[in-house]
Image (spheres, rainbow, N blue to C red):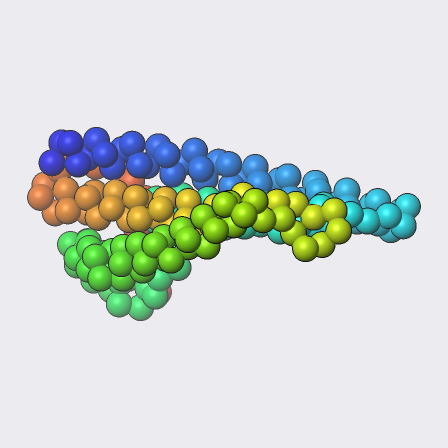
Amino acid sequence: MGALLGFSRTVDCVSTRFGRAAEYAVLIACVVSAGNAFIRYGFSMSSNAWLELQWYLFAATVMLGASYTLLRNEHVRVDILYGWIGHRGRLWIDIMGFTLFVLPAMALLLWMTWPFFYDSWMRNETSGNAGGLLRWPVKFLLPLGFGLMVAQGLSELIKRIAVLRGHEIAGNAFLEYKKPEQ
């Protein structure tokens, strides 16, 4: 179990770094958006590249931040049943959810988006808009993001199994889940 927990810690570190990159992408997108609006309305000038950059940064925010959101246990879930059962029951629900839904879905999406990116990269695809950007870098965010989700899903699965087996996992968000207020 020690090697698996080491893998889990490494994945958590990688997800945290990509999550920080997603946070910066939000900030940069806001600056680009404000600058683009100022130039467009202040000087009646516009650039498709700046508009596309905003889109790329939004894609980076979502695709790079998803695994970090999963790490922090801040993803969307239906808490009706989850909030009423005990800690071990929540662990089992999570294990089943990761095994039956998250990991297969993310692996399938990774497998399906790789050719989409690869074709774009091989053709050095660019935007059809005048002054547009290369397309393959933003398309790479899809398999990268889904790959990060597969890795983080495995990490979360490992941690939950470890807790069920009696291992102490300090500082993990899933251990801090509290019953909703009534």
